[in-house]
Image (cartoon, rainbow, N blue to C red; front, side, top):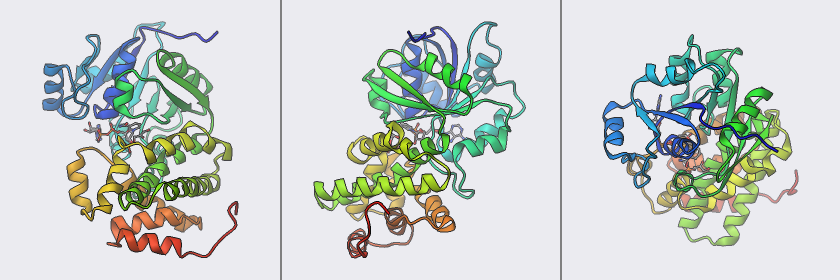
Length: 343
Ligand SMILES: NC(=O)C1=CN([C@@H]2O[C@H](COP(=O)(O)OP(=O)(O)OC[C@H]3O[C@@H](n4cnc5c(N)ncnc54)[C@H](O)[C@@H]3O)[C@@H](O)[C@H]2O)C=CC1
Ligand SMILES: O=C(CO)COP(=O)(O)O
């Protein structure tokens, strides 16, 4: 029988939609502190007991502490009582991960679990590689990923996540702290596979949103998702992932969710592109990160360097950054030579 722990100290760094939802879910069982970097926003969140900026309409449980005080947020887990099993969660976008980790350098943090999905633009690194570069090998790290819209998790609806880490003890700790209630957590040691799946599905959600926006139909959607999975797998295996990881929650699971669910910000970017809207305006209007945008650029560069064929990713990047039209891009994709499906 699995041992679920309760009342453990957990700090969530980053008070966007996902950090807030995770904090709400965990606060039912643990002593959770949610930290955000913007003091005005955190004051407004505390006053309304609702993250009115990033996750409105989901009241914070009374036990959830909210703070913009970084020192207090770190002390919550770094100076936890003996015998407790603290957890530190980074819930910022990929672009914010390195700056956040820089702030953690040299501090006595117990571990670090990150929720972001993407490749770092500029370096082409996955989050676990960024963590290793900044914090070194001495801090145990884990990626927590899988199909999980913030709004549904905040409402307490069921979801399945996967924790990936090379550190067996941290994997077990994350399962014992996060698994429970309506959240199921599976463990795995394929960090590359888990992170590649979570990153590239965002690009494919933009593609599927664009196809749906053009009214290309359900057959086209299914083909895009399936060929997208082939693309994810090709890149992931080249980077050292296990192919079977892409059949799991963080591969196929998150791909299906994000490509088909209108709660996806990335899918909404695609829908808006199909209406002829400009990227800057779309991103402004969204008010949230759409990781597929920077990720498309990063993955296009990485795939070219590695010689991995990623036609859908290249098509998305062409529309986003080279001013190519969505319709012409679709025509070009359809006109490609036939190929062996499993090649
Ligand atoms: N929203 C969702 O349903 C899910 C999101 N994710 C991933 O979680 C990550 C965060 O997403 P959301 O919270 O939804 O984004 P969001 O756009 O709702 O909020 C982003 C938050 O990160 C903060 N931030 C940005 N840079 C930061 C930094 N350097 N230090 C601290 N905070 C920083 C912003 O102030 C903001 O509070 C993304 O990588 C996303 O792909 C993963 C699963 C579900
Ligand atoms: O990662 C997510 C769900 O698992 C959230 O997707 P979006 O960032 O596209 O909203």
